[in-house]
Image (cartoon, rainbow, N blue to C red):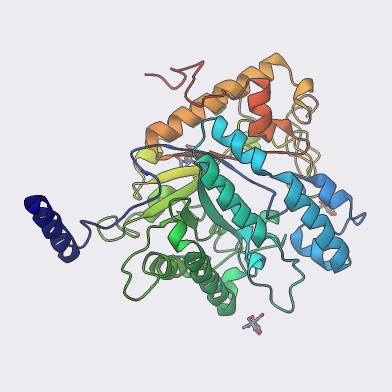
Length: 427
Ligand SMILES: *[C@@H]1O[C@H](CO)[C@@H](O)[C@H](O)[C@H]1NC(C)=O
Ligand SMILES: *[C@@H]1O[C@H](CO)[C@@H](O)[C@H](O)[C@H]1NC(C)=O
Ligand SMILES: *[C@@H]1O[C@H](CO)[C@@H](O)[C@H](O)[C@H]1NC(C)=O
């Protein structure tokens, strides 16, 4: 008895003088277990692609994103419509179904307006109670949450999923925007610091547009890297006296090749860092023309690139089982698709008929391709990386993008390791 107590106390004393020994208690065994997850896209940040009805109901074609949704209609009308959407689009049943599908994570996009709306911004707020419900439900069904900041003040990419569809990124052009983002990270940290068993990851910014940096977004990557260091400090060392929090801090690659992040936050010095990268094979003319076989081959080849990632824990936080951009409003409300040439300036690859909409219209060949491509990706992203989070759980009318529809129609297995093509990427 005495011996055990002594040894126990000695262990505690030792642990307190050797930093790192005790240290971290992440909500999930990242690196040992694979992340298998799904995004709750289009819920707390609305998108015309996910729920076109929310936009159609405004009867205003100028409403193309969350920003214009608040700008071009009466605030009370807008709030009622959003509340209805938050309450019905994702419910406790979805969390039960996600857990029953063998998944262990949900990634939840949020915008800054969940906590912070400036006087000159038209955003309608009220999302927070639903995020808190999500935490409750995730805990009940044993799921982990990645909270991902999609909408930073000013927009870090100009994409619809940032809330503000713009010609470029503006987040990094004004230090007030970055300061507000820092405060947002501090607030999220304080809110969930005792809940890291559920909210195990904070993704500090999603898809900051580092691409075409000389032309479109000069200076973004420098601001982004400084922000990454600052946010890491706030989140991992939140309180004086409490040395470290148990959050994982997730970065996004800023549309750079993974090798760009060589020597950034080296794991010998920075614990609890994950990298997120997104893989879509459809958003340029070359990719749109790839054959089914080529799509699968590329997915398989990604394993070796991920395995060489300078950030040891790297996941694919967005990807899809479909090969095409046929889903209506995917590229923006009323924008058309590259695949069928209805996007301005593109030449058709083929018709979108039978490739988007209800799964009842999909051919057996298309569904079988999606099964193979889904398996190639999950196997590859687990082999080379720390796991995957598919985009997205639910879609109003583009079943090819929906995890839920994939389960119901057989291109996604009920158990994500129940492979029909176990050697699709070779042995
Ligand atoms: C930065 O943004 C703030 C808040 O919107 C604004 O008051 C300020 O004028 C902006 N500064 C610059 C240099 O644009
Ligand atoms: C996936 O493969 C493509 C094509 O080779 C490459 O451009 C991309 O960087 C790869 N991404 C990852 C995360 O492996
Ligand atoms: C298509 O592109 C042309 C040339 O860039 C432009 O004049 C036209 O307004 C565009 N149409 C639409 C619908 O965006």
